[in-house]
Image 1 (cartoon, rainbow over the protein chains, first blue to last red):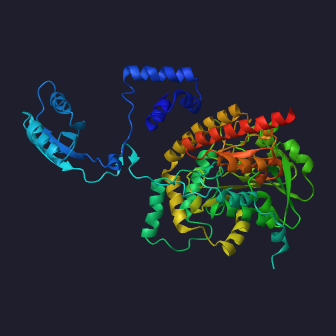
Image 2: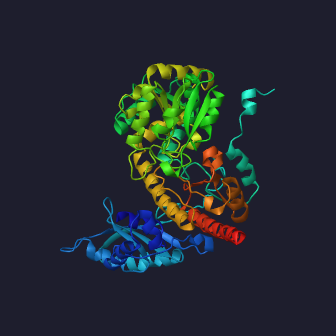
Image 3: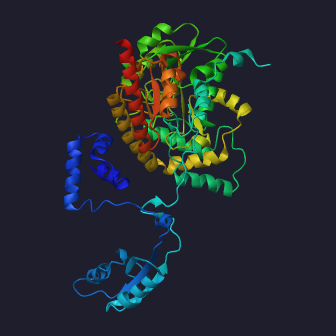
Length: 160
Length: 391
């Protein structure tokens, strides 16, 4: 069953028919497992991995280290929620180490991100300090290397 | 100026097809007999490290002691056979060199070597080059392309020296069962023959256990085990393989090796050590991926009407193309020119490959699916013509 999800994680457009052949199970059963997973939230969403720079529309991204004060009863969860609800926040993690929350923020330009940090994030009561790192170059994302390697030239067209 | 032996040696059937293939553009190739994966990064990184640290000199003829030690562990852990790394293992420049050494070390002029056919292109050629005579035994869908002891026994003469087998098999994808292997082992013992077992695809088996020839009772003494890193670790271009056998055999092979190859590339040896120490997870991942592609290919070929027995090893499917009325060369040539899909005609692997083509699934799933779509169209069209011809 795990294999079905591994295949989907690699290719969200893999059809149940194809997956069924790959894992040697009846199509019906695979369909059922996928439906169930969509329902119970095991599969959250199907999306495309897009290299926006190809469209000349490069968004600005920043990784922000946030130090916060945990609250009685809810720990970091309440403040984390207040932060991740902002649509600018792309990913949010509680981390160990010298700061508490690591958030990935996406904006149209540096100005937009600066405004977010200065006017929305920093003023939050529990936020003690932030350190903003703007992303300069993306090499690999979601397990995909963002560079098209031409595979065809590497192998001879026919070998014994 | 050319020696008679070489002059009369037929060129590889693959070579002939290569020239035609080079003249056609935008081909989807199912004819590449090597992994489409690049060598896992940690293995490449060790190769780089070895260069960085200046490991650019010869190693001992038999190969780096650490590598032989790791191989001894590996063979013990996987197949329960103990080889002494000091004098029962020889590191070679790919398993191709290993095969050549093995044959040259044991063959006297006129000695016969029994080879199931269709088989890897180099088997009969290497026997001829070593001064021997290849005795081809047909295998077919009827016996799942596995040679039977009963087929071997009547072909044994006083000149027979060895049986050369390669399971999992290129080009058929066939694997041998323990029972079948044991029966062959009995024949080898009865007639005092050596078995040369090319197990380069040993790790690429699907839902079955690989049978390692020397692990069969009484067979370590008379088996020359050949393998390497090319297929399991996607290391074809590194040229690194090995032989494991009894001391007197390894000594004989090493004699030729020391005068010809000297030693296997040092960089590749260091990378191979890393492959053995930390490569298992990547091997399993690749095998799982091949298995998925295998199922897609075999199912579709059967649906298309090119009957294909289920290959349980290597990364080849070997469908019958007899339904099209074409011979395998015609089929491959027409398919290439009309649909730009390259497969290898079965006859490239010997006379008993006629009526089949080899389709390799070591290529991306999207390539496989597109290629099969085209093959489907091709087969439908040519079926139609045949039917009309009959009417």
